[in-house]
Image (cartoon, rainbow, N blue to C red; front, side, top):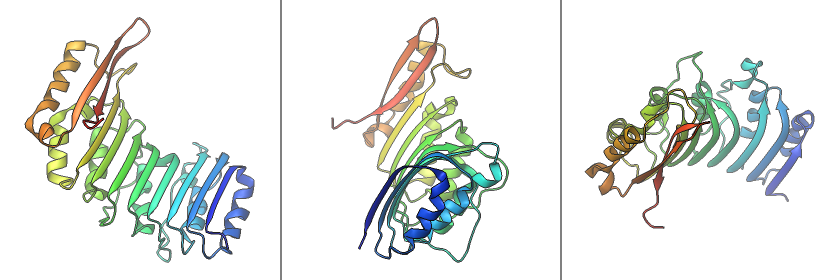
Length: 251
């Protein structure tokens, strides 16, 4: 019997047949799939995976066609509930599919999305995720106010949060984080932030301005939690701006 399956460098033309065959593996609990080209319909791809009755771990990697936006979004199917506890998505994933994703994953505990992309086509429905404790997100041009709403909608019970982002200076405004964490993520105990503001039209173009922003992360709120920050400023002819990141006090 097969319990763990890893499929690498597969073409999308074969993916449907492969996923159909997985239905004949009733003991499969761990699945890794790497698709090397564009998936035509992301919804069908996920529906097949979420239909696997014993699957608790899944890692997927694929590409999508930007022009086929309707097929890049998930569609709800109220008859399917996945037992997945950990999901890693190494692909573009739109924010307006998060509520549908979570409707399939009532037991999810750990989520990682490598490229979360902005979308404005619909209102995102809040869902309480009581078991979701560990979230890792790489944000692709998502403004802080949209990110903040996502946190309020889905992630109020998380304990570990890792964010990689760029584009919006609000991500390095200490008071915004303090209010978000105090009011909406009270159980958070491990926090990691990486902000890349180099070569950005909205980035900081002054070393002293960046230093002043980082000083705001030295308040008692951050010190008590042992969340410390550092930064690197780049001032070159071809690029300028700053990188801000958390540091591990135990290293």
